[in-house]
Image 1 (cartoon, rainbow over the protein chains, first blue to last red):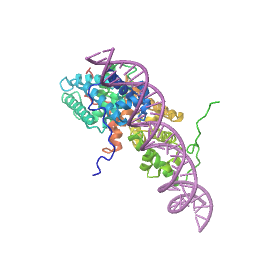
Image 2 (image 1 turned 180 degrees about the vertical axis):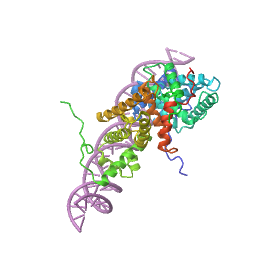
Image 3 (image 1 turned 135 degrees about the horizontal axis):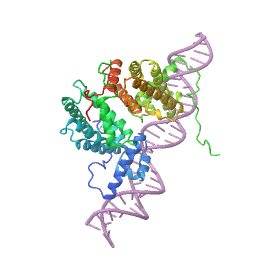
Image 4 (image 1 turned 120 degrees about the vertical axis):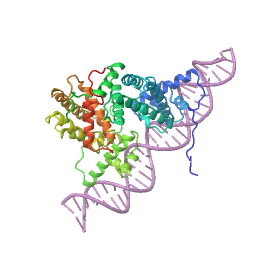
Length: 204
Length: 204
DNA sequence: GCAACTTGCATCATTGATGTTGCAAGTCGT
DNA sequence: ACGACTTGCAACATCAATGATGCAAGTTGC
């Protein structure tokens, strides 16, 4: 009927066969440049991205048919690294506090420099959305374990805590110039658990 | 010699004389729509903004000569409301805890203009930058008072705490559908002061 | 070394966003 | 009620970003 009136463009990146070594390097350079450029200005042009990658604009178009395809590929690429970083911390098996610290450190290592790609989490791409939901679930599972182990208070709102946790990691990532990953992770976990106030339970 | 080769456009908004009532309403509608629209998609078109404001695109162009002028005006407008909200909470004279709570509530109320307009804080406009710096100073002054009064721990990193505070407010604002301003302010202050952990000082 | 592949460059077409203007209809202030 | 102002609409001009392509020169893999 009215379905698919838009002129379909070829996928190009997606079901691609293995690339030659130089093409692979170019691809990575473009994705990294896209992250750098788009995190500074989400409306940056393909021209600017190409320039940042040190390639011609036409080359970018040869690898990614459309701007959207590039952004999608970037989101997927970064999201996979993100998920891998979380998994590597054994968030479901290590003791809650250890898992929390390790996860934080790992994510900070990856997130350092993937601010834009992560903000595209709500991408239409179902695969990206799925992975993000998976990580979110893992995170909340970890928090529930922490609560049951007495690390978190029994009355905490898990989704809210997760959002605060994400926000703290984001803030910490902004300070990567000043402190190393370990110190940043400590800062995040410490702030999340203790807050900034003195231990006087009857304040409000 | 080569100075000012660009074709100068008339300022329009800036040194304007008082507007008629309907024009004033339109102006406000446009700025609010711009905030709403641009916070969702920073690359949104003038068309989309006009549509969100319920006016014709040409009307937007009559009020703001260029897209840049609109964004600048938006940044300044939102920043002034932001600063006014903070001032209204008497952050320098009220008792620290009261000031903290009141400031949070006021800012949350005004937070119509944060997502986008506040991210434009690093605007080239020196006036906007000045006001932001002023608010930042007020905020850190309040935190120092809180620390001296024993509300915050003596060893807290004030700039870090301020950033965490901003981030918490941002997160809370995302939930304004579920809770009212008072509850949100309580949540923010509570999280900032106590964190999410159990009161066991010897954890790490 | 040779074939296949990739890249840069120049060039072109297309599209959508931006910004302007004239005019008719509507609104505001007094 | 009247003049001044504002708005929507239609039409137009401009321009920058996107995307495609042919060709020559340079790489890669075997």
